[in-house]
Length: 249
Image (cartoon, rainbow, N blue to C red):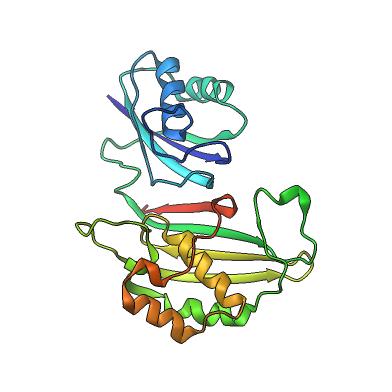
């Protein structure tokens, strides 16, 4: 039995998210399993590094799967690339240790949120960047972001309703940069893991800070309250990208 690792990227626009769902074929996990099962001539179940919401994209997504097939990696790469649609691309394929697990072995994840903060907005990228025409206060966004750094209970920043799972996570960095030429704003968030909708809720909160609706003390109060209703609305999914997943060497 071989364990194979894929690193892919995808445009999530037309998909119902990563996780396989009953009643629809438009999930990334379901589609990729279908292609691999046909190529390898056996039922393939893949393990992804995490679940992305409907409409969310990935620039570097890691998955693994087990197979009895002896098909060489190069042949598998070629057949997979020919089989999948243009919104899924294979970046790397390799045999890996039997113990490798794309989700459990992930150490850190980094997400990127893109905002078009120009006065008019770029019509050609409107499906991949959140257009906000009112100028955002970057410094207030950065000051509010500092409140979220470190280990906290992020219950206010998730749509997860069960109380059986821990809502404690650690955020290492939140970088907010502005391109003065294009007026694009990039929010980059790196942590040891993220709860359901957590990144989109954080992005929505920081956007409200940029609009002058929240101060650092407000964000601290939201964090302390541990109630979803206290935090901001989710930022739209189409502007969110899984940027990277880090593993130990």
